[in-house]
Amino acid sequence: MTALTSLPIELQTRILLFTPFTTHLIASKVCKLWSEIISTVILQKARYVPTFTTTGLPNLHRLLDYNQNFKFTLRNGRVIAHKFCQVIDAPHSRKGGSKKKVNYTKAEWIDITDHPFLNEPLLSPFVIYPSRKESDELSYGPREHIILSNFTLQMNVPSSHPEWISIRNMGPIDWTARKDTKVQDLINLFAKIYGVDDDDEVYDVVFSHGWRIWSKKWFGTITGWIRVLPAPEHRPTN
Image 1 (cartoon, rainbow, N blue to C red):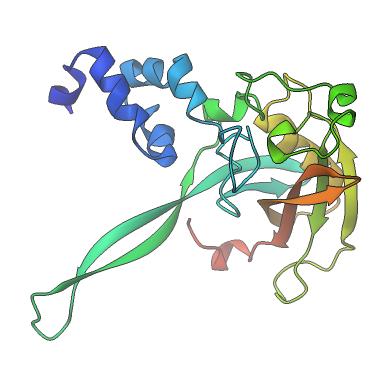
Image 2 (image 1 turned 90 degrees about the vertical axis):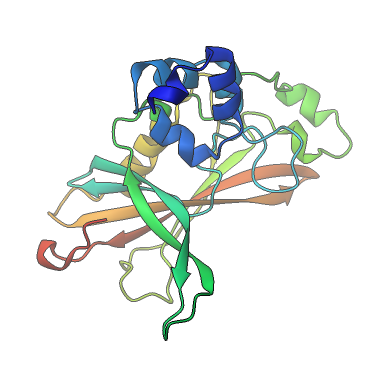
């Protein structure tokens, strides 16, 4: 660690720039120097989906870019925790004395409650978004021409999973993100819409996203999936 932080800051910046997004989450908490490097403009830009992309939502913060890798926890209508799923490649030796190793992946949730990334803009502040008028003048709106008002929100409960609570699925809600809308603002909005503040149950809300097309325009859709967590004595630690 000491050897790495003793390198020129420019080189440390390049190293962090080419590491996975999950590494940014962890590295920003390692030391003050890395926290400052992670906060530089070049690293901030890397935390957003590219404008021209064939997957995901253009310009969206990568906290929400990975389907169902981000979740927050609700209790009495209040957000009490935020977590991000880290997928790890782990080599494993075969049983029976074989020297051959096999790779497998495992997922673990890392606690990012109060992480500074939650207070970053939901959509990239480094691009210029077309106005609604400019978008309407396009004969067919390509994905990269997403505008701040081209979003819908959905709240769903998977019927195929009995552990998910039985509340009415809510249809798409038209929503406009402002340029200063933070990731946490979206989380608070979902918490308010769910309105589960009348009991002591604990709920997890997992985010996913997708696309729909309407009136020759692409609309980004962010969906929250809610479920009741087990009682404390049966609740997993992660």
